[in-house]
Length: 488
Ligand SMILES: Cc1ncc(COP(=O)(O)O)c(C=O)c1O
Picture 1: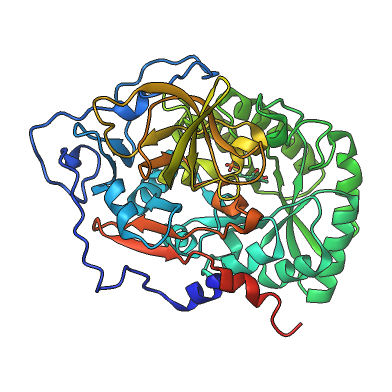
Picture 2: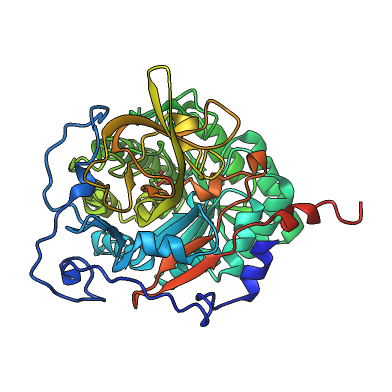
């Protein structure tokens, strides 16, 4: 499999024989990207944020004229990733669609959390479920992140990428014994999710011969005001324990002093949260539980408030809370109890660092609907089909002056009517072969990709700190698929 190759290839830069010369962004790079600067006098325009009908935006949109992002449309009408033109990258790589990331944007996103957490003892546990690219994991580990894991394989990958196990947290409502034994052996934190989960953790501790540091995942029953599929902290959720059962769990932990050490309390409300008051409400409830737990003689140090901070998927200039806003709402509470804070961001670290780059196969009209058909699909990026999620879409190069602007559904070739990347998007009618990107594809896109219709998972690239392009994951091939049947 391609993934196995990846682990043994540390430098995946494009082959030296490949000497395509990329056009550098003509705009002043030092406005946003101090690493590569080639100043000109041209002003930066932010066409990316105004190119579409944004009527669906659910938030009050205060126009933010300083919308800074690694992907930007310059005055010449071309989309750039940091300093490289996306249309030129598209022509230079071996396969489309593909995922294109900015490594410096990942660094900037982590720095935003680190700066926000100054003055607190904390762990940034990156939620690997959002994106499990091995090169990205290594980078996040090098930046000092811990990891949040929801399966034994994610645990193995985190250990292989070199994450410090004492900064890793194993979550999940259905953790199996085999994976819990790995977790106990590795010495990661484990969240207790239910009565049977506690029993399994005790069994795993015995098998591993190790005492496990555990946190209780308590359901604070705070409404995160998000799509029901990504809400997790309400009372009918399949995750966590109900607060009225807290005493049962405390008694059970007390009965297993050899196997379990209670070190903290955890909650995770949901994902795509755009109001930080929600985190404050949950943290207030959680520190009250911590007070109760401490009153029973437990010496617990950690408050884990989970992940869930949303991002600006609409690119309409809404001012959304940043990591600092999130941390500032809980800072005093955490300090007042002398707690160490664990946060578990996934989306807000990785989503805006990436686009799925596609090529237009053709344009068609049926009845009253116009369609742009691209080579990417729900197989590579399922969020629109799964959650009706909005992800911003735009063309990577300027449309000819005579291109008609129309309203399109942007769809893939997969044999399902649910195969769409965007609906009702106002765009210039693209010529065959034009590049089209789906923005904010870094989280829950490649990690949720499938091979449905035998569309093989795409390759991934990133723009390096020095502005060059490197491959960070091989695309899967037909031969990879056939290998599953060899020798049967
Ligand atoms: C327990 C837990 N922690 C963290 C996360 C990451 O959430 P997000 O990517 O929204 O930050 C998730 C994702 O749903 C989760 O279930």
